Length: 409
Image 1 (cartoon, rainbow, N blue to C red):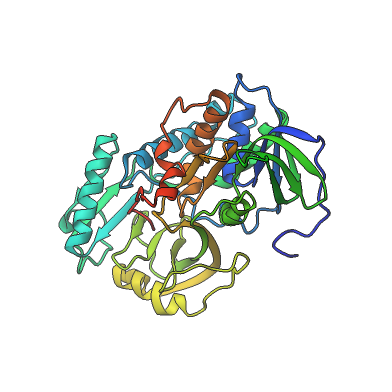
Image 2 (cartoon, rainbow, N blue to C red; image 1 turned 45 degrees about the vertical axis):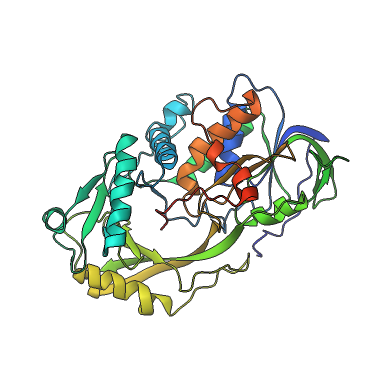
């Protein structure tokens, strides 16, 4: 089966909708749930998803991590809400007894710095995180060795560590329940594809969305939640955004000598990461160098990457990983914002009913609760009522003024 899940497209039930969401993975489903669950919203919602298996989506191919270790306070607070939402999923979803409890597995994150520039980045980010109330702490090599004696700390000058609201979780289950409850509350999800947008004569709004099945639906608001296809959807409205697919590779393995305690998601000085996966399995990942754009449908493995880059890095940092056996591997895509590796979210300044949820550069899954809540507030109330997400607005793209996030894995 092709990436687009080549079954017959499903036509929409109506000819017009108050909200049309292009993309039904983590961002689109989060927004659909927050809208459908908002007592102040009584409009119609259409979610258009080109591949309802989500097999190749960033949602289903993510490393499923959440952390508060960011370099901007807004990103820290976004993840704090995400952690609260995940740890209290059933409560947020109306105490529905059908909803499972899927709390974060707080194995933590460990950033390692190997040069003075890295040390300064960790210290700066730590100050930001402390201001936001995160439990992050900086650790000297001897402190790291005492807590995690399996590391080889040669070349490590400083670490940054946190196990509160940081670790792994189950985004697929959260996504499934967002979709299910949004549908029960009236949102319509269809297997189809947006192929064109009609703009008003003055170019200030999207009047209609054309679908691959031949229908055209009028819309009050249209949301670009198309993941790595964000640039294509924006282009239908005559908008250029700096978002492109970038390949990321992941490997699950077993070690001949398992570690004595759970391994935090460790970001090595090489840029390679590794963490506990199951009770006796581990996950490692990284990307090729140079890191550049990928074809939208290219999920092929680089079969030299494990031996040339990933395994040497983790075996050097954790000597017990010198003898390992890979049991699974896959390639996924980041929707990478080349301007500043931060989200592009909120309304377009000129096409006023076109809203972005794009360019999350690898941290979209963990940011989806706050982003869905924020965009729903914007649609319903015309303003943010929880976190002010305006630093992510498109104006900075037009002016070429980055809002940078340095803690990208």
